[in-house]
Length: 224
Image 1 (cartoon, rainbow, N blue to C red):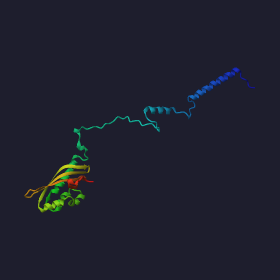
Image 2: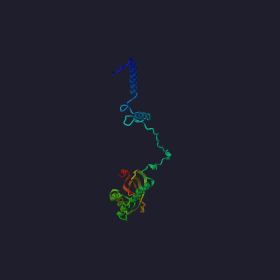
Image 3: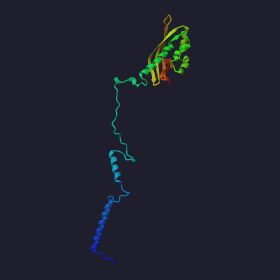
Image 4: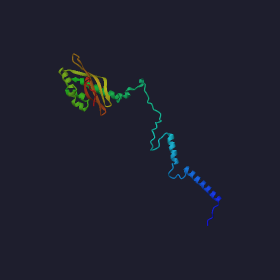
């Protein structure tokens, strides 16, 4: 039959059992058996680092952090150093070429020799105009009326023109206001001031051509 423990042995056994149970409870309370239920220490470290750097965790709902890059102020040019022509879509040479076309057309408008055909008179202007405008030049410019008037007087007239101002512009179109004269070579030395004309020139195939020509007070603002 089994041997019965003495009273002293029983007390010792229960004492050891209590110590083992207390030690096991302490082990569980400090993270023992962390298998799949506990937090990964690496995750905790990453979270602490993200918070320290002021960045929201991926997938989280953190607030945006303002950019820390320094401002880059633009330079401010003094009034006396401003280069006005740099603001134009056309450089100085292009503006001069456009003005020369406008001025040449206006001068041709005022140049009439009654001994030559009207076709020769119109051709001088058509050579400076767009194909579309050249087709309607005789009807739309008033040139036919001027031709008839001076032809009746059997006058030979020299056209003169001078650009007065630039009315409007963009990268492919410029409108100039041009003062125009028609000076006859008769005995009276008649000089006729034809007035100011708005001359629209457009860039076609790398050169400037007249798109429209009409009195400056008619409101010619340029090509569409």
